[in-house]
Image (cartoon, rainbow, N blue to C red; front, side):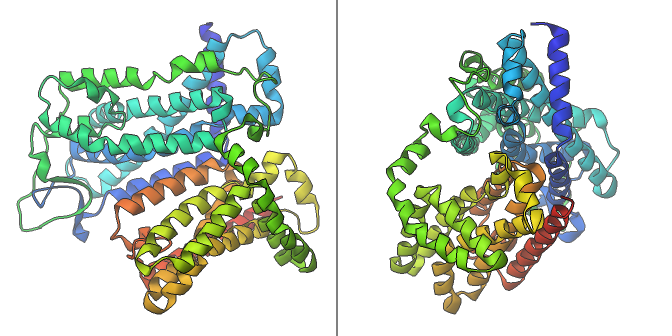
Amino acid sequence: MNGRLIYTLAAVEVRLRLRRLSTLAALLAVVAVSWAMIEDPAGGKVLIALDGARVLYTSSALAMGSATLAGVLFGLAGFYLVRGRSAEDLRSGIGGVIGATPAGNAALLAGRWLGGVAYLGLLVFAFMLTVLACHLLRGDGPIQLAVYLQTYVLVLGPMVLFAASCALLFDSWAPLMGKAGDLLYFFIWVATIATGPQMIEEGKAAAQVLPLAMAFDFMGMGHAIAALSQYADTSAMAIGSMPYDPALPVRAFPQWLWYDGLVRSRALSALAAMLPLLPALPLFHRFSPDRVKAGKARERRTPLAIVNAWLRPLSRLVQPLFGLAARLPGTAGQALADVALALATAPAAIAALGAALVAGVVLPAASLPGLVLACAAFWGVFVSDTGTRDFSAGCDDLGAAVPGGARRRFLRQFLASTLLGWMFMGIPALRWLADSPERAAAVLGGVVALAAFAALLGQLSRTPRLFMGLFLFGLYVAVNAPHQPMLDVVGFTGAATAQSAATMLAAGLAALAAGYAWSRRR
């Protein structure tokens, strides 16, 4: 455990991640989210409302409100942004070189973990800077930098440690290096969110002594409520984009909200967040070819691999599509071939598609929203790697050298994802056409938009995890905010309007144009 070696490894990790286009996309997303969550009070909504009254945008209020909401976002997106380094080392061939070095496993993992923590810390710092910019325009009172730093470190620090620790563990154990690990962490994140109400109740009841269970409050919601409950009735408090009554007198929080007991509890949460590091060391594969292989995740016999092996005979059902694709000219034939290839290599998707088609016909109208939600979730995960398949297989440059090159490949990947989306959700959309045309339009525009963003983000980051993380997070938010039209991307909540569907379609076309323009650089 050489300190200078660990520092060098961590610095290299940060530099590698900062050079990715996914970092630029993440920063743009951070800026957009931070500005979207802090509403202009002149518009009738505020970040924090107390008994229907507006809470002034002081440093303590803005810091606590923005950090609490950011904990939910970074808790999911941070994992997907940090993980994947082991798979990249295997694909590039550098994994064998790393495994042959004299550096010990502890030093290698420590450097990688510290690099991930530093990278996420930089993103959190960028988020704080954008909130400070919002404070300059919409805030009340001066910017108190110490208040922001204290709040962000205490609320978001354990979350950063937990996301980086889980990413390291999942990259150290071969069975969790693929999509199985991605989905498992999503369920862990959902379970963590599901315990939020309990943590909030614990925070309301906490005085100077906090229960031990709050050590596992990695998102910081319970601790934030515990800090605010000293000065306000938190049962009447709402954080987010909340309406308020301008006739009521404004409320204000004091400058310092954190007491010693809360600080000690957050320190304990930080220690608990590093528990996934304990099994990471004995499970670390060290790129040994008998334990992990590049592009061979299916050979690890994951549950999905077992299901695909059982359903392998279903692949024969899509064989006619290859013949039809060969007879279709140009991009249309290539897109259909991509659809056939995606289905043939994942027989579980053929079974899911068959079930979706049958269910779309026989289910009653009241069950269609649940069906569309399930289809959208499966389809989004399924097509997340459509735009990165060539890169993962090592034939990225080969595909760019054929006639049409990277531009035609980008279009066919987008069209293939779009066609698959309509295949999964087309029947419910047709049934909605007469009674709920807004929902049908949402399916049409939402599939186009999501397919375009999947292709664009896959091309920029060369990993499916950026789109998958944002997609799963957006799906979760949409389920829990069923009355927001812009969140009803494919019509499953019924809140979609003609305007929201048109806006989503326009955003998808803009993403398509951006991806096509970027592909021309090849």
